[in-house]
Length: 263
Image 1 (cartoon, rainbow, N blue to C red):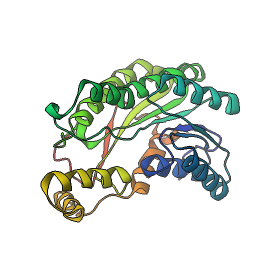
Image 2 (cartoon, helix red, strand yellow):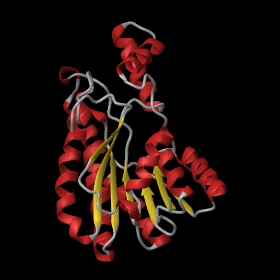
Image 3 (cartoon, helix red, strand yellow):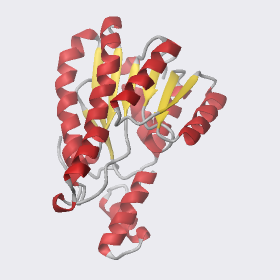
Image 4 (cartoon, one colour):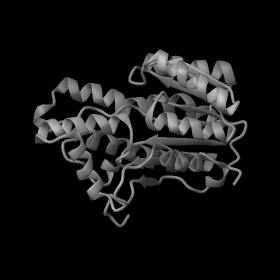
């Protein structure tokens, strides 16, 4: 299937590893040029070099922290200087720390809000005018299964990713007539460093091994395994494509059946 992504320009946040990197690799395989950002300059440079070598597309890496409005402006500015436009935006960031309400300080909430919610607003604000002017755009927000079924001990993620969901659903209606779609991708337990981090936190909290923590999650998943980043990335590439032009305002889970809700 030709997804019609050849020649498009995609900005993927938190793209040096995990889900962000998998999405970047999938978009590159479909012929899209890439602007990748991440906090770690060294790992970002390695990722850019490898994707450019294997796919043959142009890849620009810009080190920066999406929780900083100044860094977001610099990242998008570099993208526009190099390519002249951004057709596809994939918002993504490392998950906020685990914890219950009483264990989290006001500063924890402020940092998590900048990382999880404000970053989405700033990235969208920076690229949306151009998408509307060209009457074509794709905005994909990487959120979490937690917005459909809250996950224990993830107060920050459960709360703030739900806020992203409300923002995206409202924005989808506002820009639909301009040819811009807005969708959320909800990863479940997937083999990433974030899941390793959560396994360590669960193991420490419950007095079990990390392997036992992962085994519990796998037992809750109808497919009885963790997801692979490439499986998530395949959905992202489709939703970014020409073929998905009539899909907007959706929240699509990639979770092996973990969420039990009907909708």
